[in-house]
Length: 390
Ligand code: PLP
Image 1 (cartoon, rainbow, N blue to C red):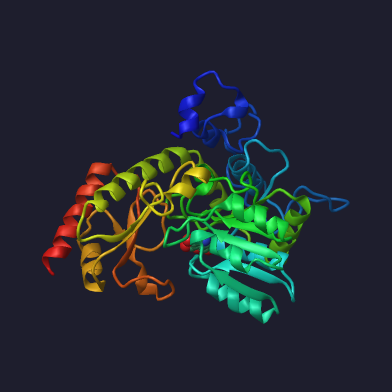
Image 2: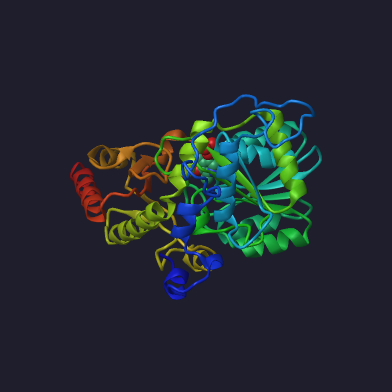
């Protein structure tokens, strides 16, 4: 529960529903007698369409009723106080990211991206440059991207950044970017809309890989874009239609079902992540510990101004590659796997991919929904075992 929810008490109006209530009801249609509360997935490549070809449902690459409900649900979470925000779902987070970048930028434009964002972004740099777009990069921490904003068309923010967990001041970057005539998109994957709402902080686009915390079970690839301006939304929609980067109805339905437990999962994961971070802070064999929820973390002061929950990911360093690999082998309750935000804890030595500027012993740890005492005991055992091999 956030501070706001504690403070608001039991008498609040529907407009001020708590996150859990909103999550369980998000996107549900009006009840229909003998119909399920959440209708099942609609499998259709085409729909009956006699006469003039008007919507809402004509062809399966353009629209699908299962997406519509999910898009409504995500929109309610991204902007609960606002009418008219449009959400579009995609086949993956990268599909959503590419849709914004490639629908908004054209030859001769400049874009500002983070140096320390998700590791597939550099692949996009190559593609953007091939299209004649100037790519500028700067670090997330210290609002470093402000220094290279002049004349840019689009500012791309990822906060907290993955995997380094630096945080930038969204309101400040939006203010400066808008003054300079640039649009702002925020990759909100790590926080989810329960952790942070970029549109409310002024951003033009909130974008996420819903493969992570939003769906939370490690079994669905999905992404979304939420956007306030109908023209911008139409451009993103057009891009989706051209590229066809659409989710299957089954994935969309699984995602919608998973949203009902979003608050339960995220609250548990964030609470345990903080406890784990506190425990790791007391270990001499752990360095470079980062968690935005820790009061002495370099990101904390900015994070508390814009985040309502600090996310499930904790990062830290062990002495070297050997120690980190042994630590991962010794964990019994944590899968050595990439990705994050799922109900089962995962951890990995991030340097194994080669794309991030991290030390050989750097661990990205994603906290799941296990009992905190079990998880922390497992981590402590693995640290001790890794240390005893020297
Ligand atoms: N954005 C961030 C911050 C990520 O961590 C990831 C994946 O790890 C992505 C985007 C891409 O998402 P997807 O794998 O769903 O394409």
